[in-house]
Image 1 (cartoon, rainbow, N blue to C red):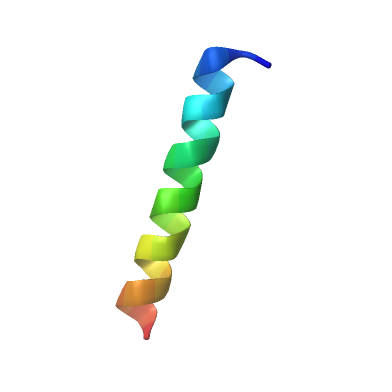
Image 2: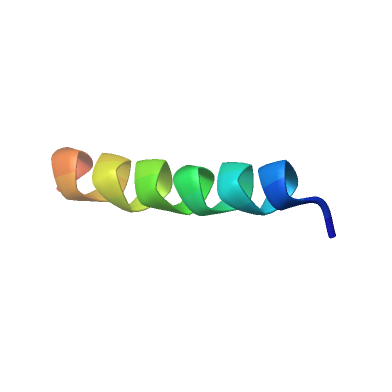
Length: 24
C-alpha cells in the first residue's frame, strides 16, 4: 500500500473518533 494512503487513513480514523467525542 502507499505510505501516504496509510497516513491519510490513520488521520481519517482520528478525525472520526474526534467527531464522535464532540457529538456525544
